[in-house]
Structure formats: C-alpha cells, structure tokens
Length: 264
Ligand SMILES: C[S@@+](CC[C@H](N)C(=O)[O-])C[C@H]1O[C@@H](n2cnc3c(N)ncnc32)[C@H](O)[C@@H]1O
Image (cartoon, rainbow, N blue to C red):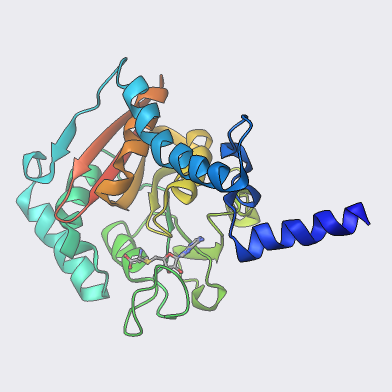
C-alpha cells in the first residue's frame, strides 16, 4: 500500500508538477526543503553552475578571443576555399569559415586525414538540418576537392545520407552516444583534422573533444564550429582544463564562435 502511494505521488511530482529532481539528480540540493523549494533550488543550481565554474577557472587563466579579421591568411587560398564551399553547396562561407579554414589549412599537413561530424542532412525532421534544399556531403566534397589525395571520413546521425566516393567514406555516429564514435571504419585511425559541425550543443561537443584528445595526430587540429555566445563559458572552462600537449584558441567569426584545439 505504501509502495503504491509512493508510486502515485512520484507520478504526480514527475509528470504533473514537472519536478526537476527526476531529470537532474546531480543538481538536487542536499538540504531539507519542500518539493517546490527543491525545484526552484535545482533551477538556481543549474543556472549558476557554469558561470561559477568559469569564475573559478579564470582565477588561473583567461583565454583570449581572437577576431576572424585578425587571422593571418592568404587571400588567394581564402578565395579558392570560398568557391569550393559555394560550388558544393555548404553554408560555411556565411559564417566566415572560408577565412577560418584558410588559416587552419596553412597549419596542417599537405594530405591530412580528415573526419567531419555532420554531413548535412536535408531531412527537416532531424535536428541541425540544412533545410530541404540542403546538399548532404557538401563540405566533405569541398575538402575532397582541396585535398584530392587525402583520406576523408564523414559521420552523421542520419543514416539516409551516408555515401562513399573514392576518398570519402561515411558512417553512422550519434554525438550523444560516445560509444558510436568507435566505428570499425575508423578503428585505429588518427586524424590531422577533426571537425565538429553536428548537433552544436555542449555535451555533444564535449564527446567530440573526448574522442579527439586520443585520436588527433601530432600537429593535428580539432575544429568545433557554430558556438553561440551563450555556450562560450563552457569553452573558456575547457581552455583552463587542458594542459600539454594541447593548446586551444577561440575565434570570433561573423555570427558565432569557433574553438580550435591543437595537439602539439
Ligand atoms: C549543419 S549540418 C552539417 C553541414 C555540413 N558539414 C556542411 O557544411 O555542408 C549538421 C549535421 O549534423 C547532424 N547531426 C544532428 N544531430 C547529430 C548527432 N546527435 N550526431 C551526429 N550528427 C548529428 C545532422 O544530421 C546534420 O547533417
């Protein structure tokens, strides 16, 4: 009888009153309080968590933000990258990533092994889609044109857009499930360039980062695209956490930020 009562009570708390303790166990205050107070305290705890972590981490180190216009790039390279993105139908130019990638390409090896997460679905039911007129594989094809002798891998949660060409191979990966990063196709591979252009949210990005720490070649680079200013604190904290052999840069692009991680 008591068990039944508890189950009914929990049902009401969870589904009718939407008490957050069922979703955010980590943030439940360990203090005696009423359920409604607990709910408010959980919200306060979540809201303040990242900004407080940032303040603590900045006690030790404050990463600079570099402006896109201050990157040293070769205009001719930027123009040819711009044309490739444009011709293949990627939207990277609109964020200023033609400039960003001419900066990055000047630092990496000539025939880099590349992995890009986010192939570019045109299925509007999938989060982070490119719209129904999007061209799946646009950026992968642009990279393939720029580096014709490179091995290029693409990964996406949408299985319907996977494809293969001579130097592009793609596979299923869900950024929310770190286990899916371990695909047979890339078993034992190390990368010179890993790009995160997938779901664009912190926990998914952090999974890409966790994977990359172990899978970047020496002199390899991880690029995390499309970071809104609201999510920037997380990356400033990450910058303070990382030590040798990693360096991190935050670049302010046209309408968002990009994190670049270097493995020395
Ligand atoms: C902005 S598009 C990529 C565009 C492409 N890189 C380009 O520039 O042409 C983002 C992609 O992330 C994929 N995506 C969304 N959620 C994902 C997840 N959880 N794991 C992996 N990919 C995801 C979407 O299916 C979509 O194809």
